[in-house]
Amino acid sequence: MKQRRHDRIEVLAGAIILGEATDEERIEYRQHIADCPACLIAYGGEHELRRLHDVVTDAKETEVWEPDVRDAVLAHAQSRKKRVWRYGLGFFTACLLVALIGRFVVGSGLAQIGPTLADPIVVNWESNKIVFERRSVRDAKSPAPAPRMVVVHNIVQLPRATVPNGPPAKANVPVRTQKPQRHETEVALEQSTASDVGTSSSGMKAADSGAAVQPAIPVWRRGAVTRAHYASETTSFGATRSEAITIAPSYTIRDAEPEGGETAINPQPAQIAILEGAEGTSAFEVMVDENGAPTKCVITKASGWPVLDDAVCKAAMKIHYRAKMINGKPVPGVYRDAFTFRAAAQQQQQQ
Amino acid sequence: MEHVYLTAVDAPVAHVRIEALVREHQTKLARYVRRMVGDADVALDIAQDVFFAAYRTLQNEPDRPLTPGWLYKTATNNAISYLRRKKIVRFTPLDRDWEVRGLRIDERSAASLDLQSAMHRLPYEQAAAIMLTSYAGYSSHEAASILGTTADAVRQRVCRAMRTLRLVMTERTSRP
Ligand SMILES: [Zn+2]
Image 1 (cartoon, rainbow over the protein chains, first blue to last red):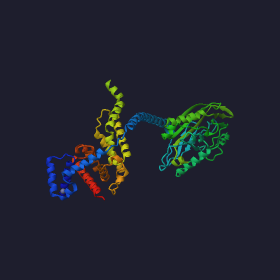
Image 2 (tube, each protein chain N blue to C red):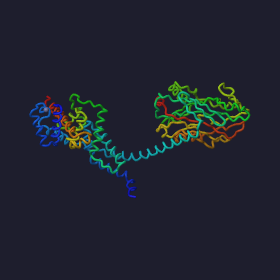
Image 3 (tube, helix red, strand yellow):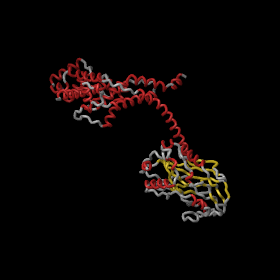
Image 4 (spheres, protein in one colour):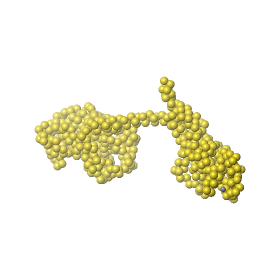
């Protein structure tokens, strides 16, 4: 009861300070402090209350500071317009991404089984070949991506041609015939260091540090594989590998491949891809004529970022290829490859 | 037809209105925030943010009446969240030099210093109440709607804040 009474007195005192008290309220306050020395000491009489109000007013009148935020606010208003335009583009890109992913999922049907933590194997088949690809699945505890990009060079190409006189019963047996080889190269944010991309030593380093992050998931042995070894293998490559099925072709085939090895294709995504943290895998096919010249590049699996896909096809069309050879005779062929772009971990950025 | 025209000039309308708001209120608002946070640079940042927010609002609704009360409400909220974030230590032993560092030398009258020292000791709600009313000139009803409380609550906070101010003044005059 007493507390309530003093709350009321504080409200009255506040009203008097602000000059809002009615005559009745003033009288009520006066009567209270006449009987309550504690309140008289704590708040003072009406005159004292008004004096405190004047202290605040006087303090205000002392001020001479004249800040000016006009330019900053108007500059902000100008930049807002541009940002709206940029967000608009972002929304458009997001729509495009959804459309591309939707198209990919529908178009691939059963052909694509995504890697999971429990089963990190991707299966893909076409009429004449089966691809088993074991990919590392990003652990949930893996560190957040930093604004730098690692290009993972996935060789998912299998140089197995149609076997006209092979046993047809075995042709459908899904056995992996060749390990997908991977190596990673870093695309630095600075234009000056971007030229390092593709050296096998840096690729190894990046691959090793990447493997250390995901110890629980089995991944393919990585390393820059010399293309010469691959190229010399003109026949019966399956037979020499224990894990491959033997569907030995009766003639030698060498598929189309880039001159200078797989590192010859060196996608350089635009700066915006790095800044926006674009990630994804672009799979592509390059039609190579009998002279080894690329005639067409098709993205077979879009990364979701047109800027990445463009960079991949642009790089693939820029280089020269060795034409597909059948029994030593060049024929038009197709080179298939994929690039996985992902943001580098923070440690790699500091290296 | 007229509607289409109005939509097309939305951005300029927001521009003109924000410019007028800044011109009219920037000084009072920045000084108000400076009293709240005790730091001129921070006050400038917060005042800018208030006008940025006003501009965003006007861009979406060019005809919306943006009252000074709206500006002060946004400024008060920003100032209080800054103080919370920085965990500015209040109720510290009296250190006038530290307490009044936000004030220019030519602004350091006795009343000005007393008020600023008191501000450093006040709980946020009391600081906002006394600043909006005695300092910025709002009635307890107006301040109540800005702070989202009742007029009586504002009056009570003003009374308590003034009690602290009185204490600061007594301390100063009784010091050797
Ligand atoms: Zn009393």
